[in-house]
Image 1 (spheres, rainbow, N blue to C red):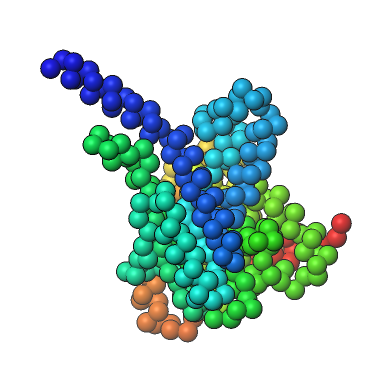
Image 2 (cartoon, helix red, strand yellow):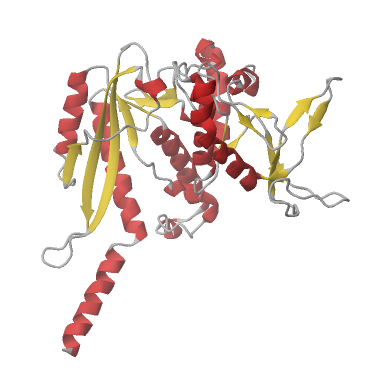
Length: 370
């Protein structure tokens, strides 16, 4: 009996080691690499967060290699080792890939089904895509492909660790347009990947689409520089659903700032900064707790009759975000009363907060001259 217990414990320890986080990360990285190559081989255009995260991962991997010897490189998958380059392990949540024809999209999905490492591949027809309707209106079809992969399966002993991967396979109406089809949310998501390599899209919906090849060659490295430091500009170039654009923008900001490595949005319609104490004590105008040094705070600004910039009361950024989120519940009543107006947020001082003009900041964001 004791021997059986010892054997069972040893087996569990072996499996725990085999299913370590490092091994699972390696497995996912290889799976994404296989899917990327398969998509490109079938004339697909990969876009969105996958391309962004690959840029960042490649940059910090190169930095890790330069700063570590071959001996230390064995610890590449250990996120606690060399924390300043931990973004080398950045892994995308899913893949967005576009094809010009349904035949190419179908051929890609069939090719994915033939990859032997995947336990199950299917198209989820019940899924409601995360794409906003503004982008869906540009697409002829969206197929949500789900993949199950078992890592470390042991017959009769352990079924292994289930890893899930999703792919959104899209076909646009306009075959000339490339992703993101004139509907870019953040500049960092404007890069695409094709057989020719990675580059910034020509159909973002921003003023950058109108730049000359020279200007784009100057601006793109600047966008990349900010991106590698987890900084970006919000665009929200959606041509449709203007009424809910502010809600979509707010949700996107929350998603980006809540990532493991939070992103800094450089053109928010309000000021967000580290608090520096002054002579008199200040408190959050929402929760009334005192503000402390280096806390993230937020406040809005307006111009008075003399065109002087006047700032509102300060508040914790976390309190402010909760305050804005609560206002989303008022949207349905607003829509009934004002069917043709854009829904705007209000700060505690009742100043309007709108993301609709953020895309105009892009033309002043980067210098187009060498």
